[in-house]
Image 1 (spheres, one colour):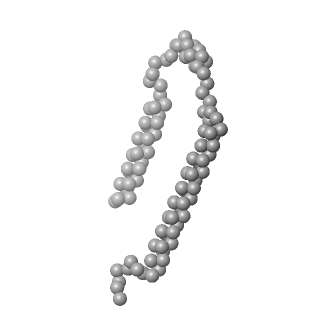
Image 2: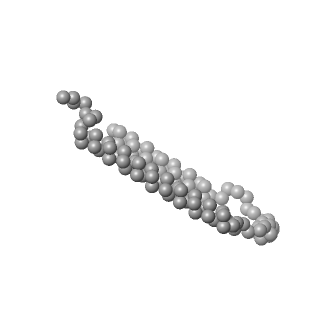
Length: 102
């Protein structure tokens, strides 16, 4: 019975997803006239292009240092997690946490 309810719920959510996706694809907004489009293109052409890059060598070095620190932190956390997993495996082999006491 639970499996049938889960399948029904899954299909229901899938149908809602696809229906909402199709509704969002429809264009309910008013059409933009040709003059308005030309004005928008001219405004975009007048704006300066923003290039996302470091301004000097100090900022460039700062980015590399930040990325290096992030990777070092990730590797340290993975190492600590592996040590914790090894300790739990060791306690499991010793049956330290078992409910049956001698």
